[in-house]
Image (tube, rainbow, N blue to C red):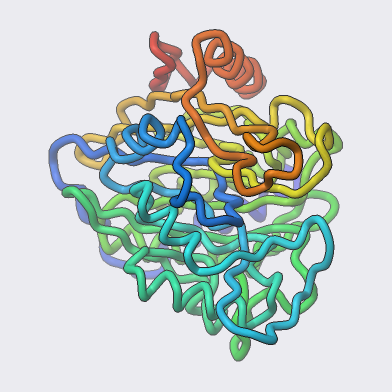
Length: 371
């Protein structure tokens, strides 16, 4: 057994030994969890609604809990000092949270490589802005203990608990500590070994969340990519399984701005990368390949806390705003894909999922269940 596999096994095995109460059963009856790509949203998109808005909103609102990643720092005060410069600095006013909430999103991860783009103040401003608006969140906090703790969203008869963490491309000082606000960091060595202390902390948080009852989401914002960022790192597959064994009911990841494969492990779904819901980058036209502008909206159905099936609806993100290459406010906005683009996006996901074996049974209409 390789060292990193042993460490992952130890982390998962450690969770039941914490003396926590047995998990409560989810309320009987169907629950629908909407899982979305990351939200790199930089502008107020409410003033000039785009053509695809209403169909996208309808798909999101079909679920009880609707989850995304807030892929931007929140700039809420004058004089904040940026820790990242240039094209890849992502910072927005708090009103972008209103935009996401207006779409129906009620649960957000804040653990990512841009949460610290305005330092500790930016981290805390994002938390305050989310709290004021009543949007549940997890992944950052005033201390590491708080950043590691699950956030809870209760909606439509579904209770979901989110544990969120980030790997790679974090600026110095971005990681939360016992006395400094920041991100819940999961460190991974060059050889793919997950830091034992970070692994133990994450799996313990998942076990604690499961003991409280409800559906538990493990969210990983990963920037330790393979040479081809479309490939899922082998170490991440082992880590995802450790999270599921520890108490998570679903594992979701973003980081690379594109779609990767999915699989089902012991009856629980793993989405290695759901790409983007919004992608308001200011990079030059042609910087990214076509697949970056493809995404999906996932409607995952659970009954009694057990995964039954999920439906993938393909979306397209506008590679160029309606006003041309410099219309960044209208760039990267989602619309439901047409038949040809839908077929291409679903085929892309199926091909990338095939690399993980035959754990998925593909159904019609973009649906899948455990094999």
